[in-house]
Length: 130
Image 1 (tube, rainbow, N blue to C red):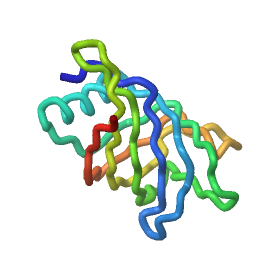
Image 2: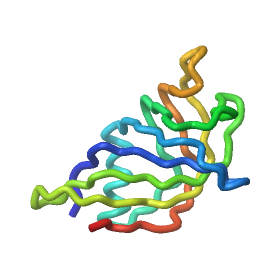
Image 3: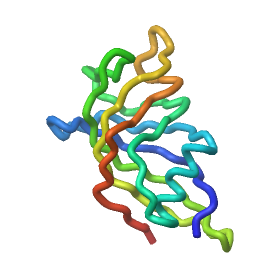
Image 4: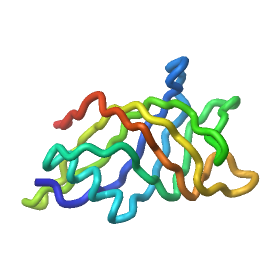
């Protein structure tokens, strides 16, 4: 049973071209963290996830961020440490497709979004890394 998510990040790719768009570190509210934990622990599906304080690194020069007006189709590999009920931290990767849409932006900084909505999530795989 997993109880906590530590150091979440996601490698983001264009759904159209497969081009690597960068790695985003982010925060999860307790409500959103619970969605991921319930998925791993009980198989409870979820279709959306609200990402907070998303910082994008290693983006290409022509990177186009999602906007408030329009979502962009993305493929992502979410990776984090998932603490289990014994206190052990287990690295897990979740591969998924989703629609990314900005909910809060900081003017002039395309690499930081205060909140991003991932919707229409389709989980492709979950892998426990050892």
